[in-house]
Image (cartoon, rainbow, N blue to C red; front, side, top):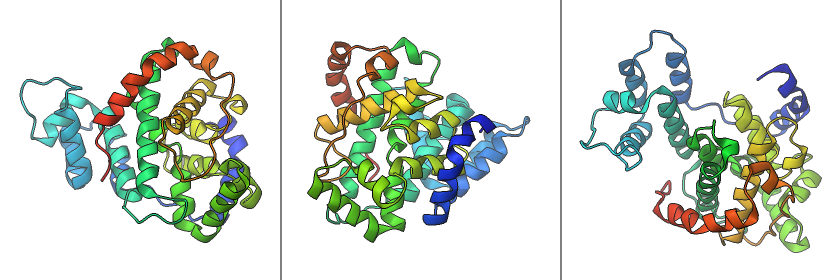
Length: 291
């Protein structure tokens, strides 16, 4: 990330790193980054890395054989699948698979945190972000899958807080429920930072795209985003739609307020967004959840 963009994150980066142990990037992503950085890298080279991780290989083959690509013949070789999808799309699929492998382990519900509820919310937000982006000229230059990933990962900081600081995080959730205040307010009060800050620091640590890290950080306050306000606004609205659609991230906590400027920022008015809801619901129903 550039010096300009890392400036506002420096304090948060140090604070979160000193307070919460952040996971290192999964090995498959590290190796993919190394291979894809080579100018002479081939599909076979990438396939060796992908093939070594069953979760990633399975997802690559599933995606390339989906209706999205509309192939007439079923592809069963990872090398061919990567040739069809291209390196960039392969990396996006690998990222999703790696995230589910690292964070998607199913656990029982603990008080106000239910992993099944959390991942449904994440997927719904990703699906909503993609549908909204495809309907808007504002995101014409952005791959739909990038908006899906931004939505999918927007709350990843909650998983990290749950795994690395469970007693404090669960106490914060109870306080949020009892006081009827949005989580981000109580998090800032109890931790000195929010799940959005934690998620953005993880994205920086994993060398994910700059706009993704920034959108994660500002998805509750897109009007404060000095860099990629349209994307943070998109995720903010997609997140809001998930809560309105009875697909919350945590159980019993109140929904935050919608930023009044998001529609202007994403180039869709409320009526256009409402018209997309049936498609979003259908896409969500058709999504394969990570368990």
